[in-house]
Image 1 (cartoon, one colour):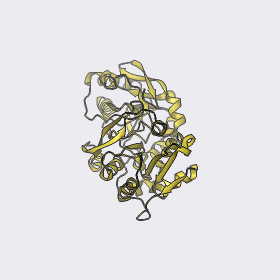
Image 2 (tube, one colour; image 1 turned 180 degrees about the vertical axis):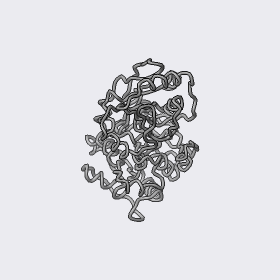
Image 3 (cartoon, rainbow, N blue to C red; image 1 turned 45 degrees about the horizontal axis):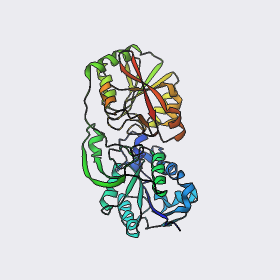
Image 4 (cartoon, helix red, strand yellow; image 1 turned 90 degrees about the horizontal axis):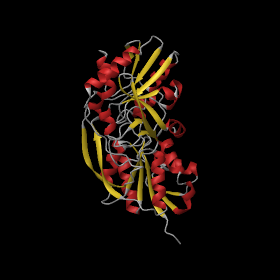
Length: 376
């Protein structure tokens, strides 16, 4: 009889709450986000990953964190599992993650699957035993670390390969995190916290985020000139975060936000650093809406990394064809031919957006570049 694959599961149920709230992270602001009406999404993202394992459930033994950290979801999906540890209080915490991760590893697992953002990866790094294989399901606002799959579905497929005994290369990947207080002030300060052993399969695991603010000033001037010509009183532009989109606003003499989402109309900013509910409320005014995002350097994500304010309902309301990417040729070269990555949190929308996307790369100059829910 084949030995079952032993899988550990830990979910940070508060991960990602600060994204749609426009709070630039979730550390220390979860209650504020919940008070704004933001719905937790971490369990829904893990559900997508676990769906790939349903046909293999008889071959898997699962050791799970309790309640909202794993057991609740596994029970709903019909998985057999053993609950490990207890929660210290009514609300989950980083201490819960570290303590339960250690308890699960003490029982022995082939892979520790966890969901969260860079803060959760730090917690796992603190408690991981040497050589313990781990994999992250991206559910946080900021994900600079290289220990996460490109999206939840990719995480599930990668675990499926391991369960079935396929050859998967193993490697050490960096755990990085930023100072969220500085981040909310527009300053990106990343720090290396260690390495974790991860299954390294190029289609499924994301690259470490490349920082910096290297702009091709003349190219942005050209694109900014085009953007000015496109202004109208009934045309609204949702400007995603990033140095490229901020550079465009600066060419127009506007003071936008580096790490937030701004709204442009008729040559002026009508809202800055908006949350998802605020953005949705603005869209109820009607008019034509376009979304301008840029790709994260080195990773290639255009949705789902730091711009969760641009939610699936926002994208659908604007129209899929009105989701535009702005990228200089220099930024495109950092992708080395890999497609843009889409991780909106809505698998159906990710599929609909897969294919060639319009990229603004100069004055009235557009290119077509592939986008996918999974790196090729």
